[in-house]
Length: 553
Image 1: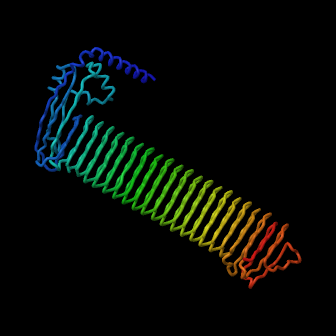
Image 2 (image 1 turned 90 degrees about the vertical axis):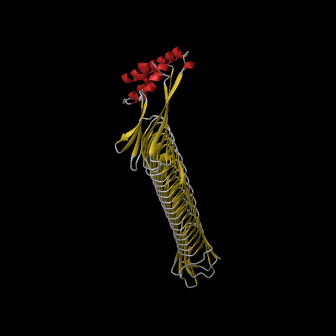
Image 3 (image 1 turned 60 degrees about the vertical axis):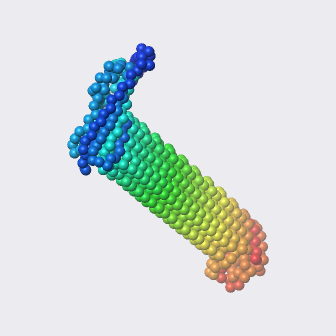
């Protein structure tokens, strides 16, 4: 508390001094002086040498020359109402280019270094200068043009200025603060640190490592791998010839054409990636994500925002929650975990595994098997070459054109199956169930809603509770197969082919039995009948407490 009070008092005092100073100086502003000083330095370089540039604190432009000489031209401009102070300041300012360690060093030395070398914050430094000199209006601007041999390596430490580097193929280390950095047509290796301003690296033939706190990053035509760390500003990339790693926070990440693996981590902003030759790994908390064309596997984690993935050459694995997910054109398997939002999967060369509580789910054109777990929302599955398993709760389920077995469990909502190449098993408490064109056996358990079967070819077992049951247009009754249909309080309707080979036992507790075929009364009781047709190869059992109708097709 004491520190906060002292800080507040200092700030109030600073503002008071600022306005008092400006009132006193208001008549002098128009007569503010600006002075400048030019420098030129040069030194012969040699292969393998590094030029170290530090303490410059200005705008740097570095270009390649055909010779082996380092040439530096600088202009320092200072401004203040005190002309005598400016003259003294410039007299004590010097540009130094000298041998240093295994190379050379360039420094701009001025009286300002005394303040900047102290280990203190910018605010504390400003307070000290105000009380010491009373100067608010002093300004300093530095522009340095540097020509170096094209293969020169550079080690740069700068602040409060922009840096431009052109046509240098040596290794580059750049540490800048609060200034833009633009590097074009360079090579070697690049390590770059910056903050609060744009970094652009274009046409760089080697690997790059970039850290830019609160600054945007643009990469284009990078000849090696690229690593980027930043925050709050965008990362844009194009034509990365190696692997790419982006670790960011609250930043848009957009780009295309990565020849190696691509790994992206950010949050809250858009991720848009296309044309990745290797594997793709994305972690994007609360990020909308769009991915198009990944030649190998793709793994994505996110939440709350839409995810759209198309044309993946390997498998797709998605983990998240409350995100709409669309996956189109996946060559291998698809595994998706989400919740509450729509999941759409189409054109998959492998199998599909979806776990989406409270998600509407649509799956189509799958070469392998499909397993879907969901609840409360529609599940629609079409054109699966393999088998289908749906485990749902209170969800309507529609499945059509399934190549192999179909297993569905749900409740309270309709279940519809059209064209299954294998057997069908349904557990549907309080579900209506319809199944058409089933090549294998049918086994259904349900209650309170109707069951309707058409064009079946295998054995049929239906266990209903208070369920009306209809079986019509039977295509085939297998030899040594069976039809067992039981329910309570609701009628049973069975249509059989005219040439069926069956033995039928039917019983009702309260209803009537109506048959197009000749019947035999069982022990003289019209509530129990027996029918024998042909060789009796298939056994049929019908049992309910309501009416039973047996029709001849």
